Length: 380
Image (cartoon, rainbow, N blue to C red):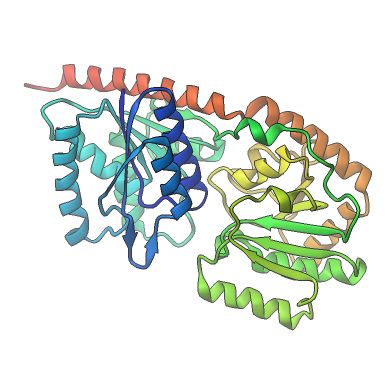
């Protein structure tokens, strides 16, 4: 099979899973081409993900699908039509709204109808209504839409995407994540941490404020924030809050790391005050590593963090209330350890990468069948 992936950038969690998926598909004998914006408006693909494609023998081309301005978008659509006509993919897998719109247009502009699978991640706060309308139109026109969280499956139904054309396929983890490791939090300074790009949606500022309350009760505790800066102004506000609270010796801004597992291995807990996640892959990684998870109940995360069963749900509210919740949990290490064991067993059963790849392959076949039916019904 020839598989054409379209994504604005190979970056963050989406870039990780798309580059892994493309590499797995190539390893299974498929021809795979990944199209990204490369560099646009000061943003760019992460080198590690592009390197993963090269090492796997996956092709790459640049088309601008990050900039939605007409003077950028429509020429990119025209070039995609030409590319699809020349390369003749069996399926186009479009990740996010703008690439889905382009893929839908290109799919019917070639001599052979190309099936389109749209991957829905999430809609962050502050999106303009025109962007939602643009993406909704594209999603409704795709042959199949895949999402990785139950909240977004419901949201897609509300947007008018037919139930039979929506599939829930969580992203899984490679087998190496499930190798037994030393218990987290073993001797050393008690440390809690979070992994995610530093931006408002991820809630690092709220976490610092809640941690300040924890520090007053547990003076030896430390906080590590792992992840690159995605919003410079927000990162500055986080740094300022750390200084203002007198936490410079207790909070470490780690930045981007190639492998989060060494950090997870020494954490007493993974704490997320993120406002929204497409799935919350970092939460699942923490669980696979045996780290207790405390998190706000938000889309994506709510599928895996079950209060008192696989983790601790942090209530919405003031930093004082959230800090008190964290402190109470940290004072009960035996309970946290039991939650971590159940969480690890849960993700081991339900979040294997092999299952993800198989489910995506089944989605492609369903999309091909839907496209063939649509083509037969099209007026001549």
